[in-house]
Image (cartoon, rainbow, N blue to C red; front, side, top):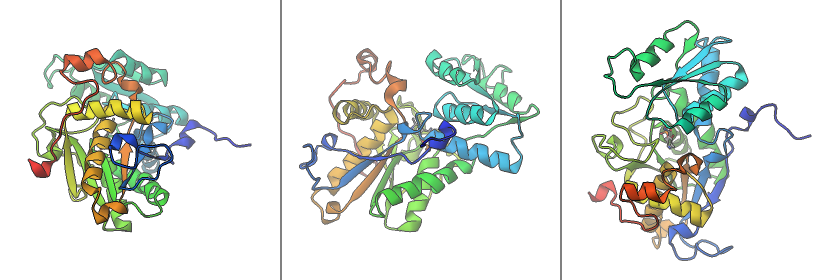
Amino acid sequence: MDYVDSVIDLIGNTPLVRLGRTLDLPGTGQEGEQASGPLVLAKVEYLNPGGSVKDRIATRMIEAAEASGELQPGGTIVEPTSGNTGVGLAMVAQQKGYHCVFVCPDKVSEDKRNVLRAYGAEVVVCPTAVAPEHPDSYYNVSDRLASQPGAWKPNQYANQHNPRSHYETTGPEIWEQTQGRITHFVTGMGTGGTISGVGRYLKEQNPGVQVIGADPAGSVYSGGTGRPYLVEGVGEDFWPETYDRTVADRVIEVSDADSFAFTRRLAREEALLVGGSCGMAAFAARTLAHELAGTPEGRDAVVVVLLPDSGRGYLTKIFNDDWLAQYGFATGQERPTRTVGEV
Ligand code: PMP
């Protein structure tokens, strides 16, 4: 019989899928046709059981805290998150018998809160309209909860087991799946855990592998000051401790308009229903593929782009024409994006 004991045993070992017609390169659009230019492969992380790449860091951070004694049997995991990391933590915590409390601002949608509750987690909603020093603020509530006996806060922005999980799993998977032929790795950056862990692993195997970050225009990673952008899960207004500043060879800046238009194309043309940060990263990979096409280097190039999550969480946003129109975005057309080097 072929089975696992728990869904958490299914985390990782996600497949690579070749991107075709969305690259708009000759020779990559037809079914069964062999690509002539760079080969662009998407690492599809929504196939993790919790639906995102964050299942990887959730397991690793929890196992490390168990080993160090920071997390004791029956303990409580407290994290200020409502996104993918919350889902990963809630799933792993439930299976391992821990209680989970997530603190989130009231602007977080009811659907997202209900996903966490569905796994058995508790959600504490804080008012956005209070100052950070107010006792009910997001920061104060999570600090208070985390300082209670038996509580442990993973803190994905500082926890080195976040990049380590990618160094130990995502990186080796990509290396083995491409038989060591990967030449470029492209990914978005939020905590920076993915790029730091995967990038370091790949460069240790072959220092020639180019590590490329994709970043929303306005974020610090591409030289911005944190100016608002709408793509979720990526870009920062500070430098997280989990980000290794030495690992990226280059950062490609992508506008919200290009991220959302490309997210829609991935669903419609590659049947990959993925989130906005995936559209952003894949658009950067497409930009790179166009640069490489026709060059001697491009013929053997193998570009891997990591797609962190599913489009299911964005049906009322990116996949809703009215929402896009409200922010002035096109529903199908792309607009040009400059890379940082060109600005
Ligand atoms: N995309 C999404 C949807 C995410 O939730 C995250 C994590 N914040 C990322 C990309 C970026 O991954 P990392 O934190 O490893 O940089």
